[in-house]
Image (cartoon, rainbow, N blue to C red; front, side, top):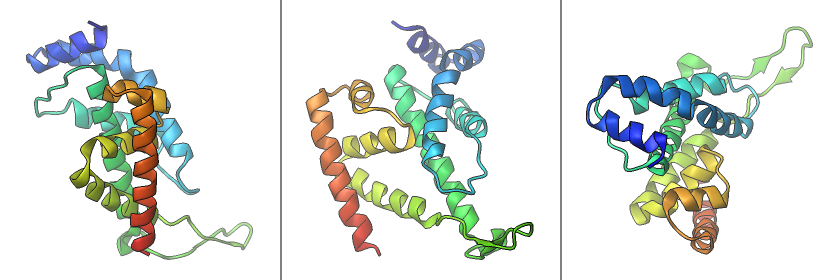
Length: 185
């Protein structure tokens, strides 16, 4: 049993010290995943990888007791937490209170800079929820690939499926999401 799995089991049993032991073991991996995900976000993203990791970690080991089967299950949950944070952030930016669809003007250069649309993240989230209703494994695969930045091999290992199945699921999920997102335009 890996150290992470052992600590996750201790957290499930209610060991308060185990939570403190978990962060140093998973922090670098979570930070790399967050940095990969944020690198694909449109320009103007104000959320930093460190903040994304900290927020996701707090959601994962917060007040409510959680149960993870193993290391892979923990990282699926981490990818889901990061996805939710990014979607919440995109929705917040869309609100009129936070500028909505206003254009930003750079005062030094006098040029108009238009921030990339955060609608894309929200539309993807909605389509992803519909895919989860159809096939949870394929939805988890998309979360791992798009929001956690895992490769096909890493995602296959986390999901406990073969590389070939993972590749087929990924092809299907991409086509399904493409169709759903085009339909919504």
